[in-house]
Length: 532
Image 1 (tube, rainbow, N blue to C red):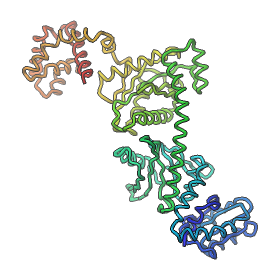
Image 2 (image 1 turned 90 degrees about the horizontal axis):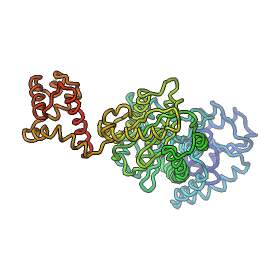
Image 3 (image 1 turned 30 degrees about the vertical axis):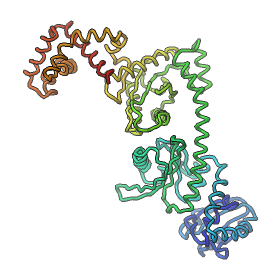
Image 4 (image 1 turned 120 degrees about the vertical axis):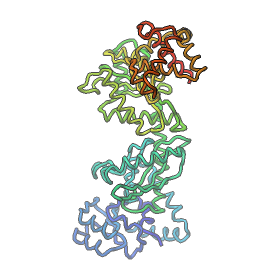
């Protein structure tokens, strides 16, 4: 004994089109209860009567593929009568010829082994979208392929049949909920290769189970194949379809990545030449940019992005690929069409002026866009810290190399000034920008000249005079605010400030002394960051 679904998992029946009632695919196949009807010999009324008689299944053949209409579809689904179509007049004889072969395989226990080979061979020639559509019809459940940051890249929905996005077919906010839950679980065990069967629980007590299968090879995760049990549970036969589909999709994603790598290598060479001003003229830049689909006739804003830590994944390149996908998606949602490239362990984002729409590009608008990007990255990759450096905006594309150097300086000096997950604009660096250009030995001498006695005093007395001085400058000398921050009385703070003046031979009311101490404190912060 075998089911209709098992019978139709072999060629040539694999190519038959499923029209309705596929929830009944587990019915035991009996030749005498399976109806085969030539489309030229039946009308709508007779078709409804045939389905209402609850046969094991119904095959329509000949002519062109029929549009059954809502009445037939609904009745077939309610009665769980599989309705299939084949254009060949030989369809009934194909089923009769295959029947004894499948019966023998079922009897010998080898049915699934042979079905796996047949399914894999049949699906192998399909592109990813067609493969997802085929799997979705065969499994009677939504099928989606995600990239490695859980963004949908393929699904079984075709535009002509309705919305492509899975989010339009299942409960509201499901996609966001699912991706967040899956992301957290997969990052707990970054290189687990087995499938994960999960159940989603919603606030209104709705439940939806799904299977998520990683598409991984040699430690690199390309994405996930997911099937959502919206209509029926996943069977053993369904898993054979999924395993075959997973293997084929992985082969296709590897091939696509290899081709993309070749293209990206040449694109990276162009971006490198652009950032290091290796062109003779503006026109040459514009012409070369057109080859890659870039319009470089207008000004661009430039960001440099760098992950501060790679704790999220063992593969640095996988992390960099994830960042580029998220950044590209985030900027496009903000109506930007960025040029994105990787220079060593940094991501360069070149954003055209027109992307800012009615806004003028300045420090504030650039910072706002960078903040939006940073927030998106942290949503998808919460375990990773990100630094973003922003260069100044120039009206000539020839100055993009200058903006690039400024963005790199902003990123590096931002590590000194700020904590992790910082965004630094070149215009905000202030005096640190000047200090960074001075020989470190000279900075060390200046720092020791003014702060050595303070540091020695703190070490010998377990004091915190240096911290007091840093807060003094941070809060513009406001005694009450500083005392509150340090949990001490204002008079105690005044005593500490007096002690600092004695040790440094300075007067905090004197602007020149105050400037020297301020610079020494900046150097102290830089020194501490460098030592870390």
